[in-house]
Length: 498
Image (tube, rainbow, N blue to C red; front, side, top):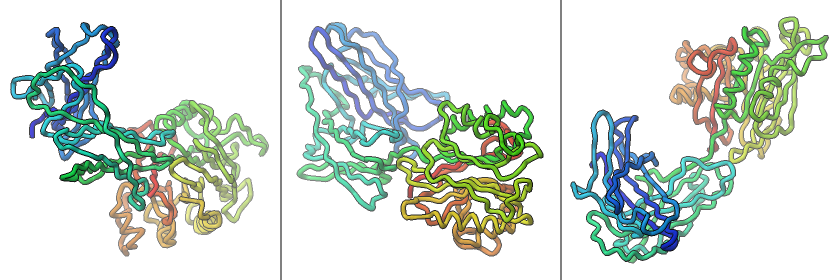
């Protein structure tokens, strides 16, 4: 296969002679020789002046290949002033070398207003592409070019938004083509028909689809090389962080740092621990509340729920908080510790909220800061679990216990969670799936040895019967990622519906 290869060209003209609008479109397949590559169309109109049109990445193709696309539209002008017929070639520059597709030295030709043409390398080519479903998007347009010689009578889209539990079919229409008076010979190019359709996905999270082209003689499929085409919405992004109760140097700068990270990372829900505000004789001081300060520094403040547990560092009301891009429902705070004494650091309160996340579902989120094992972790976690289970209903798609649990991975406290066979470590599931299976599904007798070098005490535990799955997990607020802001690092996890 060539390192760069033309697949499709369209030369379209609309309007009348006094105000013609011409547009050019090129699709090509390119070898992924280097991340830093330059792909362009070198073309000339009827005036003989050569131009360079940069191409942009469109999507991944089969192994080691990519689709690239270049487009240009000219403003309305007199017919005599448009580029008209064009000659062109394709050029790839990568890894210090240069590659061409110039139709074996003859250049390609595309007549003004001749519409679309395909090369023999792609008798069927999907022209439309979307990286992601937008929040307010409820339908997806589909466009494809099909070689006219195939004499296709019907094009259908076969699709699902629930991983093929239910499948649907949508029909495409053949677009009318403007006839061109140009009788030129198109060496290497074949007349194409353009078909278009639309998939109504509603609020679905993930769309999978394939294309079927039928004639009287045959049925041809384009299913993206056996993988189907897939487009989905943004996942749920959940961030956890212990704020260190106003004990940081340059505290104000670090609050800005945290707010900036929440915005740039696109976090949807943030669970904070060691949230602090001045004690003020037990009455608190809302303007100094660290969760409130961070929230007010977001471009658009989130919904916020916070409560405090005890006196911290002899001068603060210390507690936990949940920030959410979406409204909080059924907010509640409870002590999970034996002690409810505001002057005891062993008094531990957890806050919870129910959140309806568009296209994701309804989630119950708990922001917790529990005690060390010897100070009551077992009783606190058991109360927290019982509370979460009590709240669970058929309308809840996932239950997430988030925060600082003060148990090292592999410790006795962590083993308590594992042996409960209900809540599972989602950071581990994302970054070490084989080890996750060994610990939480197989319960290998020697699993604790595998976590000897894992020093986490902050977790997102998800009910194993939840309708979400973790899709990624990363550590943030380190020297390499947004910089330290606390004596804890943060964790950003993403979740998608099953």
